[in-house]
Image 1 (cartoon, rainbow, N blue to C red):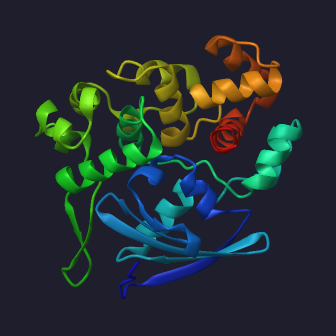
Image 2 (image 1 turned 30 degrees about the horizontal axis):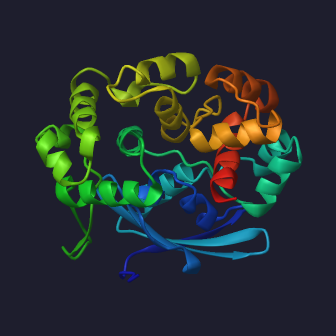
Length: 292
């Protein structure tokens, strides 16, 4: 991955793994470019482009950012990767049993990212009945087909922006199907229109989880699980606990001796067991259940 001659800035972060974070099926998994074996990732942030090099040593990771707008890049990276998260506190709160303890050890430093609400919405509408490889292909197609060129200070194109809901309104279902969206195309078209004209995603708040989730579920194609994904990774709501097939199976196997439980029952279980940081607990449970 090539780095351009841009202003750079470096810093260190405790308990932070960019590899585990990006590999754990969060929005950047779907549209960033990366070489995680070498700690490299680059991604669009609005009309800016952020390039990251991260190298871990012990419990600390050295991070170097490069961008033509360093102030914006620093803000984005710090907010997106939860650099202010107190991982000692989070781990102490979610480490309730041997399974989660093992998950923390296996994926130590994985953060729950907080991304642009619309980017998160589109990514998780596309994610329905899909696998990570296919989701990434479709989202990358959308960025390439509908995004806007991003230039460096020398006028050279260095990437494409993530298309906004308003930009997608200039296209239709057939255009989205050409990018591999399939049956999701109609939901994407409806969501783009609704989030442009009827719902301001940027005025919603994580402070009232129930209200946030209710508002998100008014978007066509957004059900219980997707709404929780958006609440968690688009707004940082730690009350959100997305339950997909992997999480459901894992919870039933590890905590209910394989007995089936409803989604509502599992939500209540998570609320009691990991209250305050159940969004973080979910990400470790999901990533572990999916890979083991």
